[in-house]
Image (cartoon, rainbow, N blue to C red; front, side, top):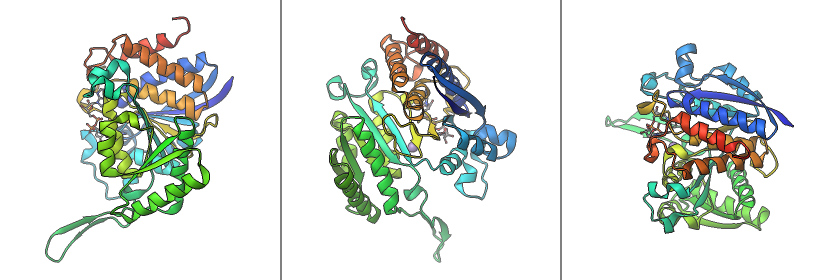
Amino acid sequence: MNGPFKVLALGGDHIGPEVVASGLEVLRQAANQFDVAVDIGEDLLGGASWDVHGTFCTDAVVAKARAADAILVGAVGGPEWDDIRIDRPITETDGLTRLRIELDVYNALRPVRAWSALLPQTPYRPEVVEGADLLVVRENSGGIYYGEPRGREVLNDGQVRAFEISEYRTAEIERIARCAFEAARGRRGYVTSLDKSNVMESGKLWRETVARIGHDEYPDIELNHLLMDYALFAVARAPRDFDILLADNLFGDLISDLIAVVSGSLGMLPSATLPAAARVGHPVKGGLYEPTHGSAPDISGRGIANPIGAILSVAMMFEHGFGHLHAARAIERAVDNVLSAGLLPPDLGGVASTASITQSVLSGLRPNT
Ligand code: NAD
Ligand code: MN
């Protein structure tokens, strides 16, 4: 028996709780089947927390998250809360951002693969995309989203000037570069680092630092650098040519949504955001696991949200949070089988409900079925 592992589940808003419920069913069954002990607690985040506590993330949730081995998050936000403007830092106006900063989760891993059954849902010809399997390693706690100073000012001529700063320190780049190289050792050993070193100072430091870490510490890994604009074209054109895409916070945000096209729907994508590098066989405590989609208010409450991004996030939790590869691969296989059987939710052109997809994944997980 492994564990017990403490899991904190934070559904969030709209379809967040719907897909987290599916993820938890899969978590319980896989834990049971692979003899992993889990102790699951649940709490509120985002608008759901605001409505009860008047804050988007309570101190109690931060404390529970710090004590947890892994945190499963749905998604937060919705039009109900868009107009709540507190004149305070982003950590107090966005519960998920507060959690990310408090946990110092800087290593965002976003895998994307082409699922054979979903090739017709992509805009690609099968021979271009079949077998594509990419991992974006995104720096998630620095860069232009957090650089100081930032703000607005009114200029003498009456115009408004709004600004932020793109900044990186050597140590921030070194640690995320190591995350990408470590991940490469568990995959095909090929890292492509993205930057705009032709025009940005932070991009120059990014490129030279990644190159140095690669050369000094990971000579076994093949490293290439691409300018970000050309990379968007190259990755979109031939996604199979790439394995790991290493990028800063902004560029990683952009490239992850672009390559989501490879998997057929935003509802398919999982993520793990960790406070350390993921090494095969070394569980990382305190990671956030969440589907990359938002709270989809347009379809909430109808039982049709695609739960696969959340279910695959649970697979990532088994791999990175519990160090249990077998369970992770079994969940991924069960998902693959459900898709191959043609059971598809509306975002993938089918009519299957959240519940029926979840039940099929559960029965696919059971041995001898
Ligand atoms: P979204 O991802 O919620 O939705 C975009 C489109 O994709 C919608 O048409 C939606 O129905 C569909 N979609 C998304 N996930 C789906 C799923 N699992 N199954 C089926 N269809 C799915 O993005 P948005 O509309 O830009 O944002 C909606 C709200 O979510 C906003 O309040 C936004 O701030 C928030 N948001 C939260 C997160 C997060 O919590 N991590 C991320 C992005 C957006
Ligand atoms: Mn984004």
